[in-house]
Image (cartoon, rainbow, N blue to C red):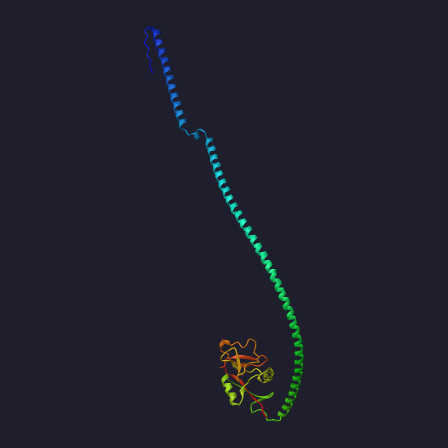
Length: 310
């Protein structure tokens, strides 16, 4: 801003006053410009402060808000947890009450069952005592009858032993008389009171039976251990057919050639085993346990038997 002042003064003094006034006006103009700039700067600063958010003006506000939110969340969580605990406690209380009622019912049933069981035991014990008495009486009677029967049996056995002794003496006398009789047919051996024919030539079981019949005998039938023991020295370690084979109707049963059932046997260990389901006839090998089952088509020797007569 330029201010011009006209002066009517003349001379040097007038010029100096004019210059001084002009310089003073310039300083005033500069001060006005400086105040104007300061005023504009203050207005801009106020506007900037008004536009800033409250939190920017006050940082502690966010901390307070955050704490309030956390407290609300904690309260909600605590409330939910308390509600769940209350529900759980309620259910537990109901379940406990139900279990207590159930236990009372079970105790009542047990007491009833115990009483009933005691009554049943008492009845059973009474029956058992009665049965024991009856059994004791029966045993006493049976003992008396048994003692009496044993005495009679002993007496009968003594009589039988006497008869057997007499019979043995008679047989001995007869054997002495038979010693003067004709011996067994040619090729036969006299063993005890029978004649035996030992054929070492190997043939099948059916063929051996036919050969024995041709010689007016039968394929050997062992009646007892005594007869087996009498044949073992002659048999040695040879193999001979016996007149014994499985029953066609039941292979677990054995029949002698005369149709009688097997009552005496001397099977070897693990025999008869019917190996390959084809061993249906019996052989003798030698030795006290010498019987074995074998395929009937095998070719081995055979023994024929016939009675020895004078």
